[in-house]
Image (cartoon, rainbow, N blue to C red):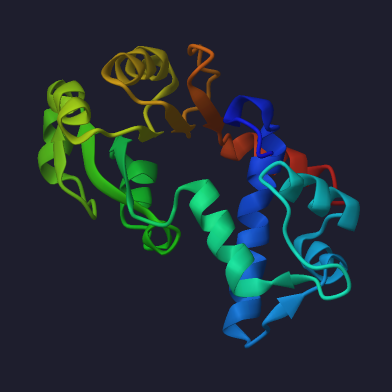
Length: 208
């Protein structure tokens, strides 16, 4: 029996996105079925890990034949909730935020940045963003009216926690945090943090 979201490890959810991208590439190349070993190799995991991850959501594949690429891709798309465009808001339209607002890849994966919010009136009027930029004071009302559950946070570290509090209070359940600080949120809110400097520091270990 498929497990509830709370019972599934976050790393398994993350790997589902990787499996989906591999399946999409296979489908584009005309591949109809794929073995667990071949799919695992393409995703960079062990076959046992692949089967364990998929088992959280049910039983898939046929012994000796493998997985139907189109069918498995459809199941993962439904599990991830990307079978229809999900509205996302962006908070902060500085250099990074403006660049994120123009990124075309979100739409390909089932997400659309419907609006951006900015506290600086000058930047709000002059931001070179790919979506409408609205004053920060309108953010909470916009979230409630449009049922927004996901947000991208690209504000300075000092502003990140107060903005996160406002997002959570308005009903946001998941935050992609580009601010260089850790956020304190309720247990029912998911935060994925992307610290670009930290990632470079990690890479520098392998550069000799």
